[in-house]
Image (cartoon, rainbow, N blue to C red; front, side):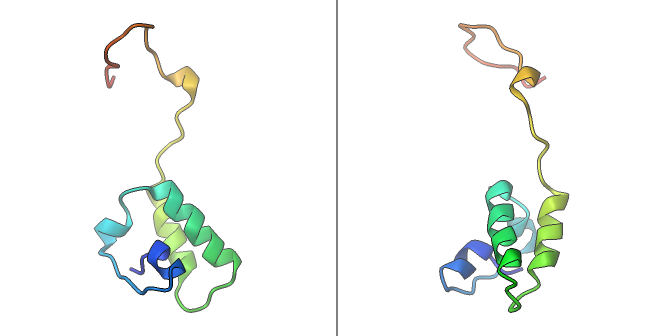
Length: 77
């Protein structure tokens, strides 16, 4: 799959599907949405956007995070 960030820099770098669908997914979604909005026809960016949307992490609201002031760590549960 084409790396959207390197594509914007004028480079053609390909990533494995695992690499493409990991890392800063939200940033990758923003970049690919920009390419889709520009109607860039060189690559199937809408397919890439669908793949990224399928692994988008759920939004966590501040109210969902429980902690006590002075805590040294926050448990994962």
